[in-house]
Length: 139
Image 1 (cartoon, rainbow, N blue to C red):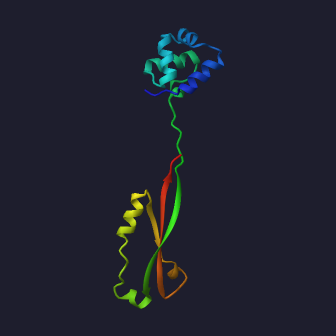
Image 2 (image 1 turned 30 degrees about the vertical axis):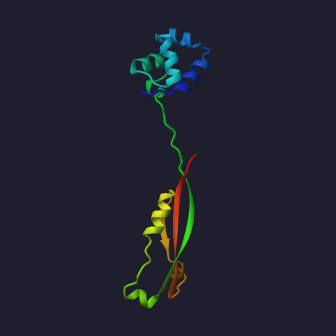
Image 3 (image 1 turned 180 degrees about the vertical axis):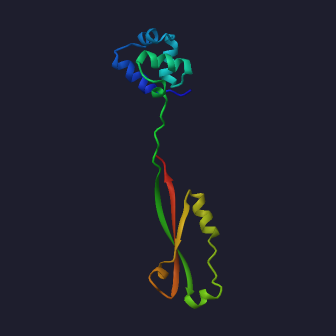
């Protein structure tokens, strides 16, 4: 089981105990205390022994994984496309986006949205599509 080894070290330090003194206070073997602090794993019995020695609840020794905030970078890509409002009422022929999307995908980009900027401005024809892509930034 995972254990918050940083908390174990902190509590031990606050009591000015060596690892050997913690082993004696908890009834654990010195090697067990060393392994817990180094590897951050402990059996339930060891957790109970440490909690008793520190005077805290067993659940307080559980390892709490910090949520990491994923950050992204974004880019836009203009894709040429000529279309008029009247031709789009029939059966507009959209450009084949497959090669572009596959190329960007191989570089780690994920398509977020495609926008027709001219339509947002009330134009009667469309000159281009704007594709918005994102990819995670490694921390």
